[in-house]
Structure formats: C-alpha cells, structure tokens
View (cartoon, rainbow, N blue to C red):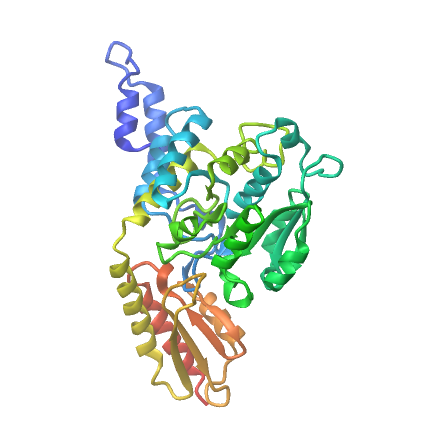
Length: 407
C-alpha cells in the first residue's frame, strides 16, 4: 500500500495544468488510497476473523506480520529491481545472521526442502536441472535416507524431486542402506525425540560417507538460537518457515547451508523456467519483508517476550483453575511451537461439555476464538499469537462456558 508520504512525493512530479486545475490522476489516486485504508475486506467478504489461541498454524494463516515487515513490503512495492540481484544481497545478509555459508528466500519451508534436495541432485549442471523429476537413466542419485519415525506427509517435498525414501531405524540400518544411489540423509527436527539417531550422530554419519544431510526445522523457533544451531552443527542445508515465529510473509521461507548447494538450488528457482521450482515464485516484497522480519526477530528481547507469554498463560489459568472439575497444567512443547501453553482438562461428569462442543461455542460467538482440542475433554491454549489484552477475553469466555456447564 502506498503511504501518504510516498504518494505525495510521487504525485508532486505530475504537473498541474497551469496550477489552476486539480490533476485527475492525483485526485483518483488519493481517493483510491483513502478508500482502501477504510475498507474492512474480511467483513466485506464475510470472512470470519478470530483470536488465535492455537499458534502459527498454516490453515489459520500463520502469524501476524509486524509493522516493520509491512513497511518493508509496502515501500519495496514502489520500485523495480532484478530478482537475482536482490536474492544475492538479501541472501548474504541472512547467511551472516544464521551462521550459514549461503542462504536464499523461498516460497515457504516446503519449497525450500524441494529446492535444496534438487540442488543436491543436480549440482550446477543445467542439463540435469531441466531433467528433474525424471531421474531414470540420467546418472543422478535417487534415494534419500530418513528415519522411519520421521515420516510425515510434508516429506512429499522430497518426493517432488523424483527421489524415493529409504527408511531406517538404527546407525547399522544406515550402513546397510547406503549405496551408489544414495543422494541425501534427511532429518525431521520436531520428531527428533521419536527417532533412535539424534542430530549430531546423523551429521557425523553423513560426513563419514560423504553424503549431504538436510534438516527440516520449519516450526522450531523459538528458541531463536535454533536459527543457527543446526548450521553450526554441520548440516548441509536447513529449512525454516518465515511465516511462523519469525512473523514474515506466510508464503516465505529460508533455505540455508553450504554455498554449493544453495547455488545449485537457485538454478531451480524463478526467474528461471523449465525447472521443477518454476512455480515456487517468491516476489521482491516477500524477500525484503522476510529479511526485515528475520532481522527484527533475532534482535528481539526474547526473555521479555517469554515472560509476557507466561503472564498471559497465568491470567487464563487463574480464571478457570478453581472451577470444580477443572485441571490445568502449563506445558512447553520441546521443539515445534516451543512456547508456554496452557492445558485444560475437565471431568465430564462435573463439567458437562465435550471438547468439540466447547470449540464450537468459542468459535461461534463474537469475538470468535480458536483453541486446540487435544482430547475428548482436553484443550490447549497457546497465547503467543494473541494480541495484547486478548488473553483477558479468552479467560473470561472459558470461565463463562465452563461455569455454565457445571452439573
């Protein structure tokens, strides 16, 4: 959106007719700017908005961008630049911030996984780049080793390159699975506790056999240190979402790692065509928005932010914990969504409501509220995506709904 200051600056260059007649272009643009500022598009379209008590969930549109990020997006929309030059410059800055040899902004963490793997397969050979995802008879490798416990649907990002997944459970399994077709060893960070092989050993095994190692940590900040922890550990490339805790554009992510892999991955990205990544377009506004969001996030007072979340959790907990039949617990997920979270459980014989019924009651009133139903009579409330003061609304509503259903 064009700011008033930039609007005036740009329109000042348009000559008025003798200075006596108002310029129609000026009037039209000024009117359009004022109209756009007043429009409530969600209300106009009949789209429900809500207080987010769940977190940075994609189907709930992730996170809310900060003012600095929106300013970067708006200001950069007023000029042209060369896309590759912008990625070069922004990539250098991001790489410095995350302790990587190189980095590039992608259209989300899923795209980053596909692009990074594509770069591993093809290197910088332009003929191989155009052959993906068709690997047969090309001389390219075609298998990715992954722990059986790390299998989730997001691993389809790896399959998009034409590779197949080879599942293992132990270091001995890896030794047996490695062959001339092995291209990569992939690690799902949020499922680290479920696998028998941890991050350091995974990297060491990859280095032992000269096989690139990748790590998906899409939702695994906070803590902020994770942004460079796994690069420092030695993974060949790491991917993270830009639209979750970093609070950049929801459709942006970061691919970071070894310079040769990032350079190869970029050959699969727009503006180049005839590649599997052509549709994974990221525009200049998203690139700069994510850059500013990352810069802002790294320099936040994270201790202060954590205390604010704890205060919000405590306020909600205090509102409901003394209701008969209610049990509350404060938990912190170990990796993904690592923030203070309130778990509320209740005795159905005392508080006569199911999780689904409670969710509907919270959802269907104004303001609408979304929480995370985790069991038949259990919900979790994570305040880290709430605006200041919204925890009071959530607390009052939960207390009201639980109290009404006491037997």
